[in-house]
Length: 401
Ligand SMILES: CC(C)(COP(=O)(O)OP(=O)(O)OC[C@H]1O[C@@H](n2cnc3c(N)ncnc32)[C@H](O)[C@@H]1OP(=O)(O)O)[C@@H](O)C(=O)NCCC(=O)NCCS
Image (tube, rainbow, N blue to C red; front, side):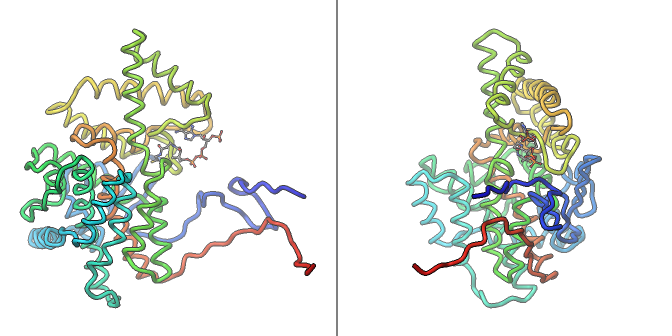
């Protein structure tokens, strides 16, 4: 019996056909939504550099930019804000499902995935495939993500969900539904900066998943349900919780041992690497330099921690980052493992007051904007995504006994 290595790297040749493992470097479509320059460390969202648009724009305006390819006029901005606010309420069956999930302590991303799938129940005209109907579905889905995440977070903690407040914008209302209190303006600005920063990012795994699903002429609920499943993995959107856990573990170890933070970080990272583990919040498939989103979120965290946050934690995070990057460079000098978006996501969302199990669901709230915009692009493209694979199994014959 022959054994074939199925993990052939990019460029491995079989029968004269190139195998791009992990589809690395393969362009599958054209998009006007975002441009990721991995060599220069630049990200452009809807034509704007991320560092310009993310800290300044309202999230609803970024959604308008992605869905309609231009920033809204003031009355359009207000009208989109109102129409999103009017879609926030969940079907009763979705709430019942969230209650059942909370009783079983289902992880937050699984609850979000199940709840989003159940939003087909809110579909009035499932057969209508007009552009207007698809856009309306996209908007209703984006509007309901925060309601699901906040309701579930409260149910998990033994509290009743807080009904959405239609007078509040998207980000502020999310924080309101989590706490029942109208949020501080600095926290809302920090959250909006985060949502804008992560709203879209080229052909990442979850966006690709959504596009594959809709390319079969399936429906938007299915596309977003699949995208959530792809996002939750630790190699994609599941990294910020573990990244913050790492910072806390190193800080506590330094406090116990009396060693410096630098020494403890160095030994912690080396132990993980020897054990064959990856350091969460570092490395990226496309970026060969520091992820530009880390810069934007780091600056937002600095502003937030200046006002209301734990400045000591901010300093610890900066020092841990420097040591991790140095040790990773020694570990893989060819690979250039730099800080990615998740490291500062963790710090910023923690500063906003979110528990770490809400980090990835909050990522999904932002990315839902990009997913829906890609789904609409893919509907226009209307081309089935269907790559090839090289068969490397045995050739067998069925011999009747
Ligand atoms: C993001 C990520 C999946 C990109 O990976 P990729 O482009 O597929 O890179 P590969 O998996 O091919 O990794 C290349 C090598 O670098 C190593 N590597 C990559 N990221 C690493 C990390 N964060 N820590 C330690 N080693 C890492 C891999 O183990 C691999 O080593 P090997 O060649 O000895 O097997 C990867 O960097 C990672 O797992 N990072 C940690 C998780 C994370 O932060 N995810 C959020 C991404 S925004």
